[in-house]
Length: 161
Image (cartoon, rainbow, N blue to C red; front, side, top):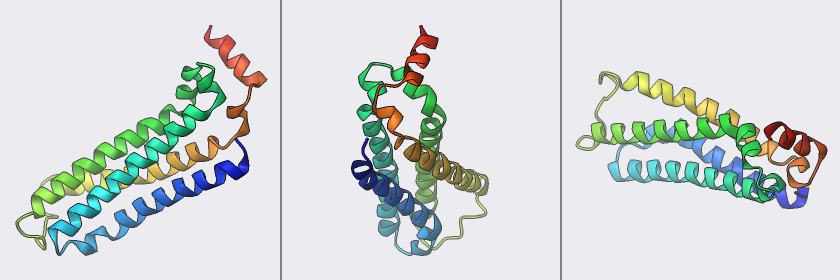
C-alpha cells in the first residue's frame, strides 16, 4: 500500500485508540448522570468495533488475502485479534456491571462491591495490552510486503502445503 493511502488510515486508527484512552481515563468523572455515562460507554464500545472493522478492511486489501492465503494473515496477527476481542468483552462486561450498580444512584460508591475492583483492574490491564497489540498490528499492516507478491509469501505458502 502506498504511504499516501495508508497514512490517513493509520491516523484514524490512532484516533480510535486515543478515544479509548481518554474514555478509560476520564469517564469516571462524568458519572453524575446515568444517560451521559451510558452514551459514553456505548461510544467507547463502538470505537473498539470500528477499530476492528478498520483492521479487517486492511486485511481484505492485502495481497495475501486476495491470493487466498488467509491462514498466513491470521497466524501473523492472531494475538492482536484475540487481545482485541478479549478487551472488547471485558469492556462490555465492566460497562454493564457498572451501569447495573449505578443505575438507581449515579453517585453511589461502588468500589466495595465484591469482585468489581479485580474486574476493573483486569480491564485496565487488558486496555494496555490492547493498545500495544492494536498499534503493533496497525503498524505491521503498513508494510508494503503485505500488498505485493514476494519471496517470503511463497516460502510461507510452501510451508503450509
